[in-house]
Each structure stands twice: as C-alpha cells, then as structure tokens.
Length: 250
Image (cartoon, rainbow, N blue to C red; front, side):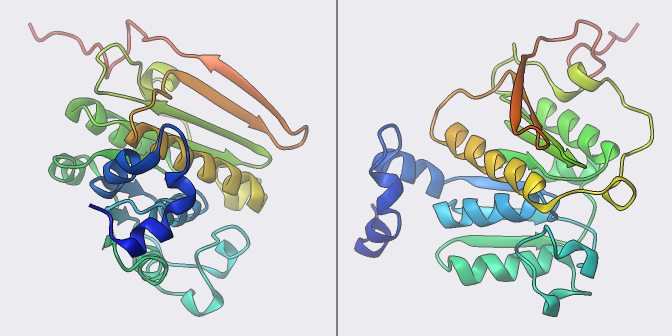
C-alpha cells in the first residue's frame, strides 16, 4: 500500500496507462543490479532511483576521475578520487531515501555474479569492456534474469534487452560471439556526453517497462548521433552460440 507521500511523489507515473498503482508496486518490490557506474550507469541509476525501484545494487571497481565529469552526470568535482559505486550510492540516497542502495567496489566477475543473481529482478549492463559484458550475459542467461545492455562510443550508441525468462530469447553472444578482440575505449576514441546519456536513459526506460510486465526484448537499437537517426535490427538465436547452445559433454 502506497503512503500519501508516495502517491504524491510518484503521481506523474501513476497517471500512465499500463503503469498505475500495480506498476509502482512492481517497481517498489524489484531488486535491480547495475553493473558499471559510468556514463551509462549514472543516468540508469538516477532514473531508477527516481522511479522508486525498491533496491539498487551497484558494482564498479573504479574511482571518479576528472575526465569522467563531462558525461557521468551523478558526480561532482568533490567526488574525484572516490570509488564510483560509493559516490553514486550517496547521490541516489540523497535523491530517494525510501529505497535501498548497496555499493560494491569491485568487478562483476562470474563467481560474484552467480552468487548475487538469485533474488535479482533485472540486470543492467552499463560496463565498458567485453569481458564483463560476456560474464554478465552468461550469468543472466544461466539464472533466467532479464538483462538490458547498453554501449556508446564516439557518436554511436546501441541498446538491447534480453528477457531470459523466455527460453526462446537470444543473448548477447548470439549477436557478438565470444568477442576476443580488444575493447574500444573512450580514452582513445572519444565520446560525447549526451550520446552516452541517451543510451543510459533508454536503458532505464527499458528496465521500467520490463519491471512492469511489458515486452521490450529481441531488438537491437542503433543510434547515430551525427545524423540523429535510429536503426533497429530484429535478433534471432544463433544455433552455434556458445552460451545459448553450448556443446553437449561426451
């Protein structure tokens, strides 16, 4: 049951068809893991905390650097040198004191993910390297937990949702394989702040849609900020995918 203060606080989203009180209850009871507290993770976390997601778990091993401030909108100059996960958690607690925020200053590796995912409603991949993306994808697939993945570099962005509660859904490895090539880094290729902000904001939107029972998976969304154009690609399972269709043991 929502309190009078909560009814007022969330009134603008409660007015929406397909959201209303039932949607708010679903959001409030959710436990969401955000992997990465950078340019994607900041808008994701701010919007999900603002929407009243009951518990947000943040994992990131890095510290805030001055070069982050042009795009990682949750941080201020006073946060430079602080662990990103803890600095972001402090910002979120100031935004919404009704929800639970847990910070983990660490990499989300396979063992940690396997231990964390039971009881998690949804995972957001907001990291910046393929090794972590692969680990998150495999762990979510194994646990049957929905995953919303985003990426941005230069003037390009992409996002996609995989609802692993449905065994027919493809996965990140169906799209990119095992991806053993080098990562493309913002420190080498550049990134414009609003590009990563656009992708992170839409990751939060996808997450809220999934948490309130709407289907958003199965489509890769590609953004070209130079032309302000979007393209969509419908995804299919790859029968040779090492995650979805691992070889049988002999």
